[in-house]
Image 1 (tube, protein in one colour):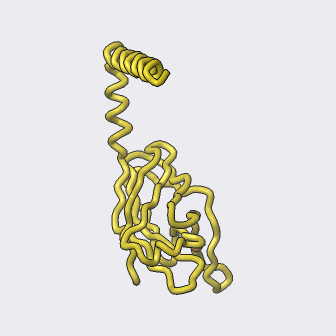
Image 2 (cartoon, rainbow, N blue to C red):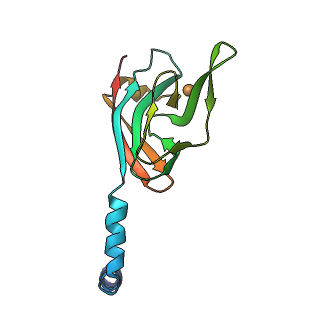
Image 3 (cartoon, rainbow, N blue to C red):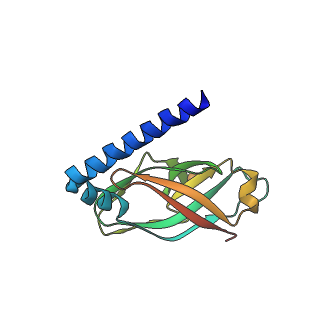
Length: 156
Ligand SMILES: [Cu+2]
């Protein structure tokens, strides 16, 4: 029985391969498309995660994002915490923080997520975050798709 399974799997695999190969040959445009999607067009600079204070239930990640073409940051996530996009602003003389649904990235401009402004709020950070040197964060863009970054964790 196991042998039959293997043969069936091998047949399925070669069929899949045949289909893929066929698709590639028939549609050279698909290869160009693949190149475009792998070339993200997004530059991330100066990223770091603020090391959480002991017992703290939140911390934040900061980074600069430059999009080659207009794009929108839709969500961010991490295996180490719940992540929300936040904006900090002055309201009646008080610094207040609110969640934003997404973040516009006009083409070629540097959008800075920095203390006192936009940031990624890391909520209920995992205990492992305090002991890690980097934190993996996945940014999901409307056009560029998902981009994973590993940000250093720094006590600043
Ligand atoms: Cu916040």
